[in-house]
Length: 192
Image (cartoon, rainbow, N blue to C red; front, side):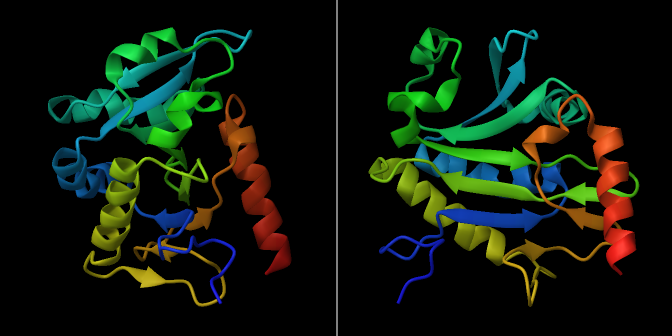
């Protein structure tokens, strides 16, 4: 029997990993190139929910990594959807239309001196495009081969060992990241 987080073909619909986000992007880069997949950040432009999409360029790693420290950062995503059509996406965001079949949503990735947020990848469509499905299978396999990577015995995620607290990807953390992080960490301490 297949677990609730896996499809019949054996790739996980959800894949959670804790590692520095730039290492994650570096590890994903070869699979992106070989499968013709691009990476985009989704940034809120204003309080009305309008979004801007910025593509990842390997020579601009620092610029892309700065999005993770920006309170307007919402998520990022891998996609093989034609880039010229991204400008047509309107107020409801990238994933509510045809592009969902060509995309993998990625939440999390923020990191501070005391915590590291999980990176949560999710296959959006029930019937994904074969190109994005092949990429997702490859990137999961490549990430699992990282030297030193471990699987949490009780929770469903992989991680590189760190002294930092690993906290879940939380979409509510935008605009209140530091307060939310402090709240979550204090909650963890009271449980222990």
